[in-house]
Length: 630
Image 1 (cartoon, rainbow, N blue to C red):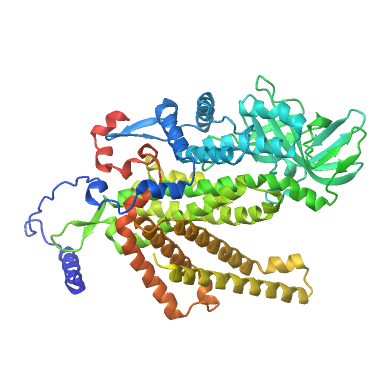
Image 2: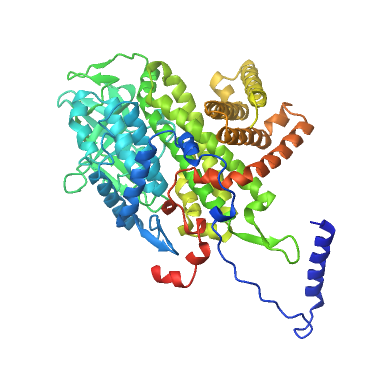
């Protein structure tokens, strides 16, 4: 394309407008042929690699079980099948009121329960059972975040607390009843005044030696339990996290089981519950607020795997240090971070699959006077927006699978590593998910705003999560650069903390003051970890097209990480010339990845029904005739 001729043509068009020619003097309008939809499978080159093999790498486990659950949801009218054009899509009806959304969420749970989806979710054990549970949860989250959160609260938070904080007496009483959804538990940890700072929660539990009961109170308004999923309408029981006072001495945070509704759904005496109200997303979840007014529960309802109170009021624990006891209480909650990190990757996959398919069929502008309009994904600027996100999502998929395997095979010796990896990956993968959703929303233009096209509404639904080819020489150079940054930032961080301490600040204050370096160090650690894990997955493949593709994605991940992080320039890890070269290389890699874009997103394993109309024949889906299906 000749820039001068293009500029001249633009000037001529503008001049024509400014000259205000009369209609009679203007050239007659030529009618253009109507647009038509060409499936990208027909216009794109055939896959250069085995799509099923890439799916096995990215999904990691339980592919057949995932497909079974997807079909189960597609088959039921409860999952709102809707005909658009020549295809049927399933997605929640967000036009419903929050009360309607909550009611249908419960009906969906009952349907999945009858079909055996939750079998072993609380009573099962072993790595295979836990991985299958995670796979099912990811599929459910692809359909509806409210449904996944509602299940997560009962099965993972409440059920996990009973399982890990409790002992045999609690297991026998609650686990099977929870798995069968006879008991609908919730998890009352967060308070109005304390969220992340669990140590600071204000709810109080005092032991009464005369009645052998704990008396639980909400001593002030900031101590009300807040955002408690399931509490507003459906939960029958809750885990209450509170400060345990024995003879006036605080023993720190402990967990108690309490019933909050009777069999008829009435709120129990000495408990008050209010609705948190409408939210920007997750309106299928009945988040509530809870106050306790001298609520008495049996001594046996203390979850006592870490500590116990004997009938005479004596406090006993095998862990004498209060801080270590608190850490033991928090350790089982790691599963939540693992689950959130893995789910975030799948939502990114949904958005990218929709966006790439749309960009391979939607055209805009031409580069010559009489030429055809150009596909969105053939614009270098569009490639720059979308293709690096695909590479990142694939790399993060490998990292999420690594994290899941690490968790399900956990030992006491690996708990600290799991905590570090789950914390860093949860933050990074959820941040990436929000960026991917927002970028995909914008890349789809006005269609990205339509709820039926999923991306915009997923942005609202998942915002809460943020509150997760070359030869070996090239690979090692990439790793070396990221490792260099990580090692140097660690030294800089330690030095800055020491300087603040030398000025009289406490260690804790010094660490707070050094938060910028701490953030950069955490990012460096996580990005290097993801690259290493993805490279390991690449190395396990035999030589061939799939390994070449993984190498291309890995190189894109490494270079876009360098391109997007100012610390490489700020601290001199790269010269200005090298940074410019990295930027050019990312653009080249976009061109190399462009022919594989459809094949990669087709390997994500997401059924067509869980995408959206703009991923397919968006002209027919928006036709007048299609209105009869609404």
